[in-house]
Length: 288
Image: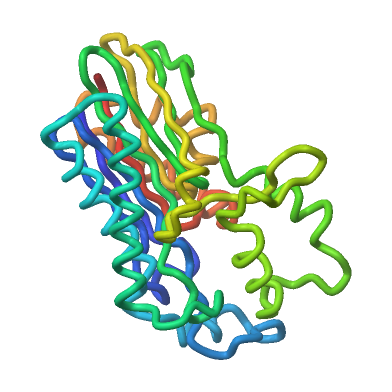
């Protein structure tokens, strides 16, 4: 089984273009999450209802263009050569493709409306009984045995920044709706390995086309057993993949049965907690 699904934002999906992308070809798989853009106007939406700000959301979105560029380039880079070192090259090539996209689409970066088109991503391939994977930012990978026991789940690589932001940046006047704070975060904390606090890098990576993004790419490999479930997912599905009933609902003998079990499960969770389970979300689930 190779099961693929994208679900829109449960609250605002009707107001925003889809920004996730995925591609599965042979034994190559990838998911990319286009990073949310600023509304075209106003720059400061502190006292404006979120729905009002979304009326001016860019459509088409450069975030989706970046996500598509990643997936297409990643798969193309791995079609003929499938060795571990080629995985890093595939990620670098995809980042370069996004750089070309930005050179064409963004005349001058201002880290606001004219921020880099960018995405988070996860991808990998299966060869010789092993899974070779790579990821950046908050997309992830999980592997379960056929008994449902979790063999691997990648960390959310954005967590160090998120924790630092919560503890040190969120002062009395801090508000992400204010342009000065969005600009500060994107210009100072994204793809900046020099941002260190107490000996640890508290920056985060994203595929913006910048060369420094390569420092934040993560890679690994895992030996597989028959019946293992491999899940590539965007961050919208992170909490769902960690849920105790996730494996039971998605581990099915066919795509149609997976739809019947998993979609109601995901929609039910999103209804209970839209912030945790209801963002735009995409996954590819592969039974080895």
